Length: 318
Image (cartoon, rainbow, N blue to C red; front, side, top):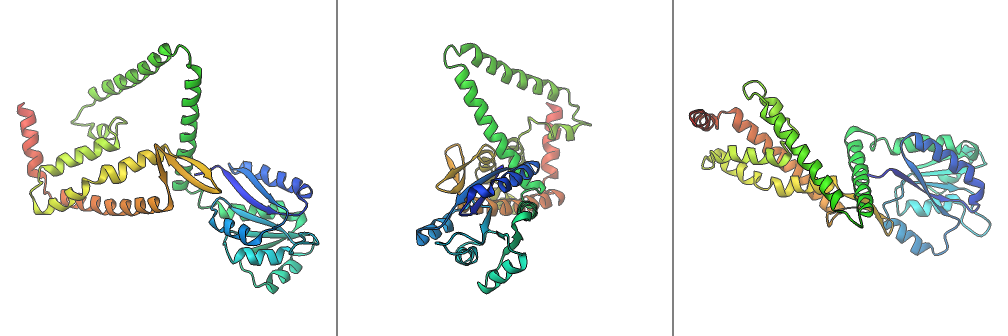
């Protein structure tokens, strides 16, 4: 997820719109985003420009002045050409009344264009922006935004620490190692104090019981009935869980959003997350979600009760 909001702004006199840019930037800051503006004073090579714009995925909104100068298409004509290629929201503005703008848009047969007066551009643009970022601000997207930001921060902190210890770094590396050991020792002491008779839930929710360990524990349970016809298929599907779910999740958690030739790309640990890989991940999530439901049904049906009882009895005798 990104923390910047990018506007492609068409105006043949950008200086005259700087105050409006500042107003939008200030209000966007309150929403937790940074404004990034790409100014365009006129399209010279139309075919090349449209082709490039169609490939890009970094533009969140388009602002367009009706009057683009004597030697350029007016904003309505340009908006019609843009709408043939892309579906990004367009805010069309001028000193003329909104009714005049809507008439110009109607005559060009364009959909999805907001018509506003120049003197109300800031407030009305923010209203449009709030609509476009509504999905980003829901819980799941916000989680992704935070994960992405923290990944960036982690990388920056690592880079700063490397810079700080470019000379004699032995003491610092020793300190880092001590911190890791201390944290693990603390976790071990907490775990040793858990009463399994009453605190099983606490143990299962412990921070040291990672997603990978949960997966391994579930595999151990299913392997007790590996020859059972009801377990064979769900166990076989579960074997892919680490590669298809845990590893991509870990890479995605530490991925960084970068801009490459106008495209927003997530990169992490030598892996590039494209639309195709994210689609594949979504499909894997659905498949493994179904498989986990099947495993739960098998557990609720009592398939593993006798295996658990035998292991518990052996543990008590040991």
